[in-house]
Amino acid sequence: MKSANPATAPTLTRRELLALVGKVSGGGAMYQAMTTLGFAKESPYQGAVTLEGAPKGQSILVLGAGMAGLVAAYELRKAGYHVQVLDFNQRAGGRAWTLRGGDVFTELGGARQEVKFDPGLYINPGPWRIPHHHHAVLDYAHRLNVPLEPFMMVNYNSYLHSTSAFGGKPQRFKQVTADFQGHVAELLGKVTAQNQLDAGVTKDDQERLLEALRDWGALDKDYRYVKGASSAERRGYDVAPGGGLMPKAVPSQPLALSDLLQSGLWQHITAGADYEYQQAIFQPVGGMDGIAMALYREVKDLVRLNAKVVRIDQSERGVTVDYLPSQGPGPMQQVKADWCVCTIPLSILAQLDIRVQAPMLEAIQSVPYGASVKVGLQFNRRFWEQDERIYGGVTFTNLPIQMVSYPSTGYGHRGKGVLLGGYMFGPHAYEFTAMSPAERVRKAVEYGAQIHPQYHQEFDHGVAVGWHRVPWTLGCYGMWTEESRAKYYPTLCGIDGRIVLAGEHASMIPAWQEGAVLSSLDAIQRLHAKILSTVSSARTSA
Ligand SMILES: Cc1cc2nc3c(=O)[nH]c(=O)nc-3n(C[C@H](O)[C@H](O)[C@H](O)COP(=O)(O)OP(=O)(O)OC[C@H]3O[C@@H](n4cnc5c(N)ncnc54)[C@H](O)[C@@H]3O)c2cc1C
Image (tube, rainbow, N blue to C red; front, side, top):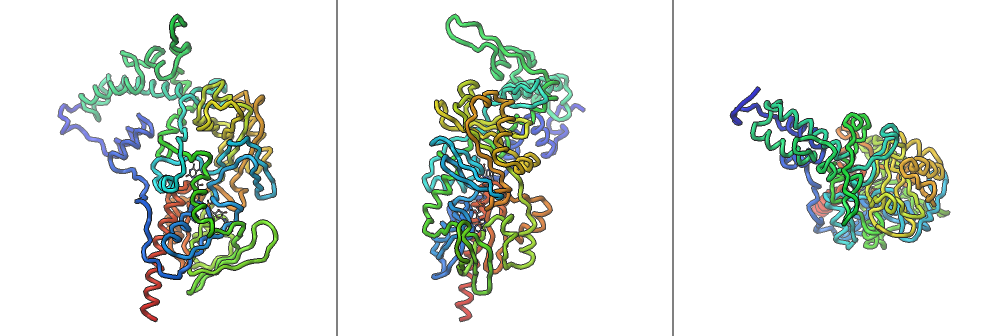
């Protein structure tokens, strides 16, 4: 159906328009459109919290010294409360954890790993990147002077790899992206030129669309995606332009659309388009534990490490917690406080003796934890830079290791280098968790060598963390479903007598530090309000 008058032309609904934008341009354009239409939301963080008027003499016990617990301790002490913190571990930070040379880690089951990375090299077995819209985490980093540097999420020179495509030969990210965009643009251009979009796009807009497609898809003057100057500017050259009398540049040959579609590699080209992965993304200089350590320095005198909480009791008057040394001998000890902020992961809390109302207990016991494994590999040299010109970023593969990520720092360093040799979720994570750490490393090297044959020659040392075997977390993150959120989330986040829970599991941003911090800030503000009203009504009735 044609319509000359834009006012009477059939209009698309907002949902249809977004779907079309998403299909044609990938998630990045979709998000852009969503933002313009007011759908996508930024982090609700409004800046530093101020808890005013803390009643004198009130004490708060914080359980867990990960990001949620450290933020709670830092803010509650500033507000004037007496704060104590207990943590199972021998260090603060929880999942915000960096493994460096000299570190030792014993997982559930007793397997012990000694990290032998060279000085300055590290792997973050847990969090490793901070999106630019994680305002709360970034704000704590800025306020505590933690230096940040860019985390390279998308590197157009890294690889997309499938064992069942292109003879198992890794393809450069830029080539798959350029070719997919080019072919799609050419097809859509043809449809547009044949007036087949008349129903939804006005005549004037069709001309603009054609021009946009030529630009977006690197099409030639005839709107074709072919080997030539335009496509080479995206996907690169067989012989790159040089200087003087060097050989003439030769454009490279695009992959055929059918091969590309069958390869499945296109599924990775929007890696940097998802909300969390859009540049800029950051990492603390020297390791992800940097922000947690800066918070820890502020509250160190309040924190008791090596304290394994085994019982949490409460009455109308206060909270009593029993704990044991998590390592070494020692008697059971007890600590009392007026109130408690508990950030112990649900995977562990569900196994503790805790006095809360039945609905809260049911909520605590109803959130399973996702599996994940990360493998850090040290090599004798940074061959990915020296041989393959890959500086940071991620290679995606259909091998069980799922991805290889190159360090976003130390470019050009001539000594050893550490890369992320595997980051597994789902079934592969369970499979790897069941292996011994040495076997996980061996497998990661074996698989990775299919992408980088240099692995055989250059591999030096590796460590592997399977999160279900991390004794103080027993899993990667709280895995909510729509149904479990509807049924348990409000209860889980409520204040049960004198206890409030916080942590990534009590947030709408699970598996991110931002979720842990926002949950903590929300919990302590509500707890503070409850303390004020409880103390004031006690005074009134006294
Ligand atoms: C593999 C992986 C990748 C991730 N990637 C990212 C990322 O790129 N960016 C990002 O921002 N986030 C990422 N996250 C998520 C992020 O790590 C978490 O959301 C956040 O660190 C959780 O903080 P928390 O304080 O809620 O919990 P935790 O950090 O787990 O803190 C809980 C604390 O409770 C303590 N504890 C446990 N049991 C007991 C007990 N019985 N007694 C006393 N103390 C106890 C633990 O020792 C721990 O210190 C990732 C996580 C994982 C595992």
